[in-house]
Image (cartoon, rainbow, N blue to C red; front, side, top):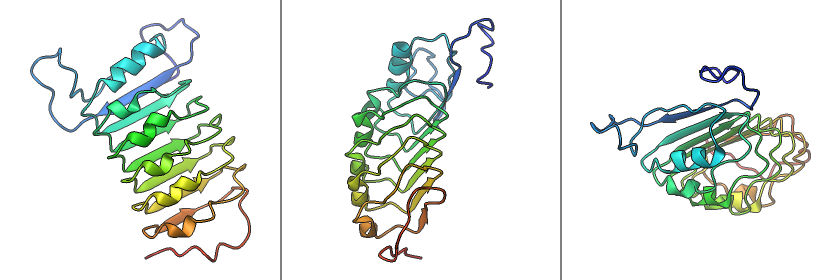
Length: 199
């Protein structure tokens, strides 16, 4: 679905966005029961509060992608108890809600081209099941919280084109499962010999 033109309201000049929700099971016979919705789309004319309620009501959702000029992430993300993958692409968000740290089953988190993102939650390390963290082209991001060192299952950490990030947490070597670390085109320099990546 294009994020440039809303097919229902082609003359509006509001920010366009795309929402993709994926779930592997079949829909229930009653279309009024949206708890196991596979895929839905909302146009740019949708109220943000309505968007938040619609998404956070999908309690069995496993994968969520928000793409486009969305100004904020739903604050009650922790209601998505089964979420395993979260992608935020080309959004206008500046901060992530603290509720994201309560996604106990999240394995994959990607923030790409979220140019206005200034910081991650300090307690992001509470994502105890996270295996892949991709921070790509987050131009205003300055700091990686120390709590990331508590992600015992993190295998892949890509920090690419985050030009204002100048250092990694001092205890990054505690990530015993880390196999991939990419810090290309960041402000990070110096000796990384303390990092041991396991094959």
